[in-house]
Image (cartoon, rainbow, N blue to C red; front, side, top):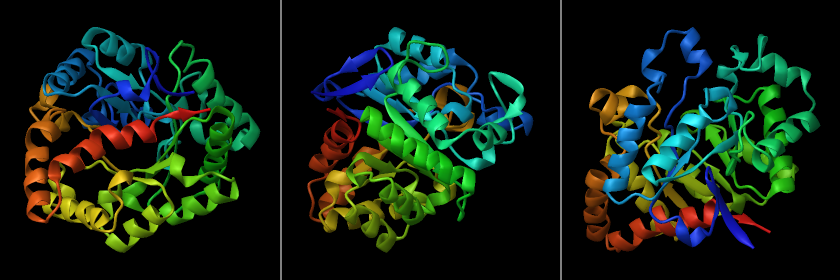
Length: 324
């Protein structure tokens, strides 16, 4: 039996509908609190809910909340938003990246994430992630619908390798899909090497932030493994124009990889939200990006409408499914 695990329970993959594959809804990362990065704190659930409703009213059905343990999750607040809006939200088990690990873990103000990971065995970290998927996240009944790991910019630390191995082993035990954070789109090949050592079928893995490294050769080689590629920086012009992202996406489509592409906005700042600071907001992709993409795809000789259906409906349905 196949299913997708949302914050409100398991559903059929066919019930996902239009899906954003990588967003953040309510989070207060302790690392950014400690470094006075106010823009990186999504700390008003009511404002976040307003944007989720904008997404719903534009035709959205499901959001994958990629907020992991070390990124200041507020699971009760996000669950309440799901209940009040009717938008299905997938929670994330696991960890993110080493840069965040100088801050203390929520359960112990005297222990940092880095110290906790260093002191824990791979088996203990695996058990922690499995518990988040099968029992609940941080004392709640909300179960993780995907497992996350991450690495730093152009490097992977020994602690990050430990978390990759734990995520891989938790995947084997739970059948949950895996999501990778690649800082600025780097180190995917190195992550793949560790995942292969752990016997992971790459078809169950999505690699995030691929548009931060707009290298078609790199993308094609990742796609060759069977993995999903997440282009989740839509609307972030400071990292490059939409023409660059669309060109990279269409290059993958040209080579037959349209079934392995995911699209989202990674709205992890107040300035990205309409309801916080009049930014693009969660409706931007649906209302503004998709019409442009369809136009460009059609002019390039593809069916833009079919590609949109794949990117936002068919591909997420496959990517986020637990298979038993």
